[in-house]
Image (cartoon, rainbow over all chains, first blue to last red; front, side):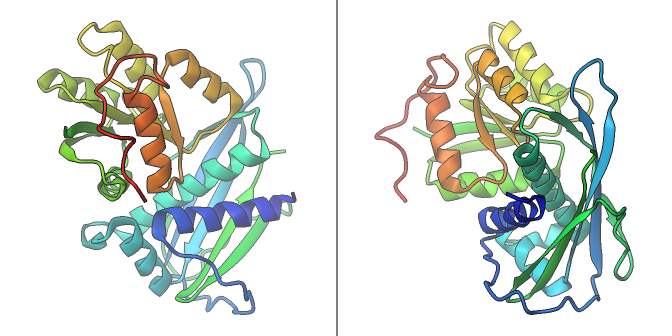
Length: 149
Length: 141
């Protein structure tokens, strides 16, 4: 399975399990590019004591209505949780899942997710980044992965 | 019987998530306590006993692996069933969990996944300890 498909599946499974949201089959909807919340999660790949850590990152951003629905699914009452914290946790789970799928023999140290404020923050996207966009009834979520080679 | 549970995770969002999923499992829950890292968990476990600990791996101060080692070394805590709740799934980690004799559920999980892991831990199937037993085979979905 290609990395992009693995990333898509990791996002879909996370939203289905934790938020009770299933992405639409129709992927024709374009992101509105008015994301208000995004999270960035750094990670390091540590394959053994003799090897150097290799750094990568995952970026996750969601349209506001979708994020609200997702948090309601996760927590029932998300009023005491900031959208940034909620999205950061989703980023953490997605990242751990896709890394475990693409490199099951490796150990990854996941960092703490950081909130990225403002409109459409750029992905930390070198040419090797992989992106996936998932369409839900309430909006689009976009995820970018830079995997250490 | 009701289950007293300790949820150990540095993320307050994830602690609430785990609690919500515990509610959805259908288990009869007693007191559900929370701890933000391994050290905090040991303090909470000293204050009051629990029937089950759900433990994240990556945490500051004291991580989940260190917590489990500390519990195994304490005769008062060594029999507490533990389920690791983590997004990590490397073969190395899984071997580590097996060696520690703890159950495991991978994030993201469904309430059904959580039920399976909890029943395994409580029945001693995963952790090799004789924890509390549940009436029947667990909640139906």
